[in-house]
Image 1 (cartoon, rainbow, N blue to C red):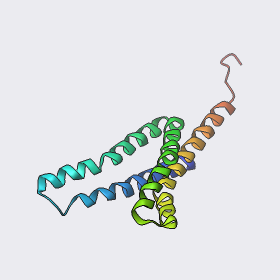
Image 2 (image 1 turned 90 degrees about the vertical axis):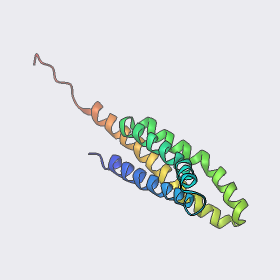
Image 3 (image 1 turned 180 degrees about the vertical axis):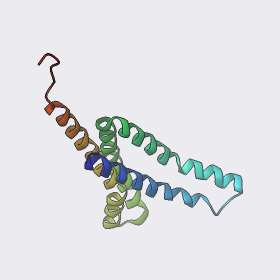
Length: 131
């Protein structure tokens, strides 16, 4: 197995697990049913990221590009939201680094893995049955 593919998958799984931890804030208030509804509402990003991982697992280039785009597009949105909450630029940059960087890194690794795989397939000489 390609090391870039393996690292991309591991980083993706760990980053998705980290994002899913934010759903735990749904517990501790309201009735049991409200908590369960809040939990599943907070898990929607995790389900989307799992779907993207499934795409990247099968089609590395497409999944890698999606991860990179999501990481880059959501960075300013998350930064603006955190800056409004804590009024600290450095903290907001750390949040971007912690949340978005793993997905950008995983996406880049998926793209590199796809490139290497295609490069290896193109370098294999064709075997002629008549020779």
